[in-house]
Structures are given as structure tokens and as C-alpha cells.
View 1 (cartoon, helix red, strand yellow):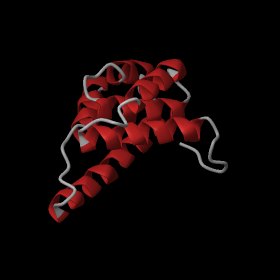
View 2 (cartoon, rainbow, N blue to C red):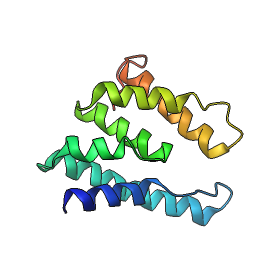
View 3 (cartoon, rainbow, N blue to C red):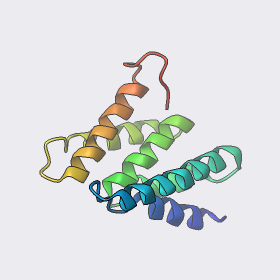
View 4 (tube, rainbow, N blue to C red):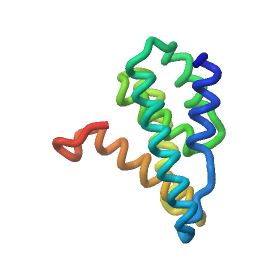
Length: 124
């Protein structure tokens, strides 16, 4: 998979709408999550240009894409400051009127808290 293909697949797996009231939508989300985890394992096991890939993803227009990329950066130990800044900005939307924005903001906040050691024994 090329760098560009990886970026596009990452975006495809992250940037979608979930209807939490629909069992089918939740099941589709679970399938995406398994594929996403496989991709994450793949990038840690292979010699991709991680900095290029995540520099692109951290600048994406979708908060969900950016926050997932930021979490991956923290886990890989790359682009740390930019990743923390992205998560901090996304987490400010906790009071949004949109459920999806609030969930993404909550996930971003929890990711920062785990990274900062607020939950001993937990890691990204």
C-alpha cells in the first residue's frame, strides 16, 4: 500500500456517520473498527513514511480523522506536540449540539488524559 493509499483508507475508515439507534449501523461501525485496528497494526509493523502520512491526516477537515490520527501519533511517538494540540482543540467541542461532535470531543479528551498518565496502567 502506498502512502497515499494508506491516507485515503484511513480517512475512509474514520470519516463516516453512525446511527447509534440502528443495529445495522453499529455492526458496520464494528467492522470498520476491526479494519482500522488492522491498519494501525500494519503501520507499526511496516516501514511506511509515518511522519508524512500523519502530517497529512492531522490537517484533515474532519475532527474524527484528525483525532484518530493524533491518537495514533501519540502511540507511535511521532508528531507529539501537533497531536496534543489537535486533541486539545477537538476536545473543546464537548458542549456541541451535535452528538457525533460531542463523542469525538470526549474521545479526544480521554486520549489526552490517558497519554498524560491520568489512568495508571492504561496506554494508547
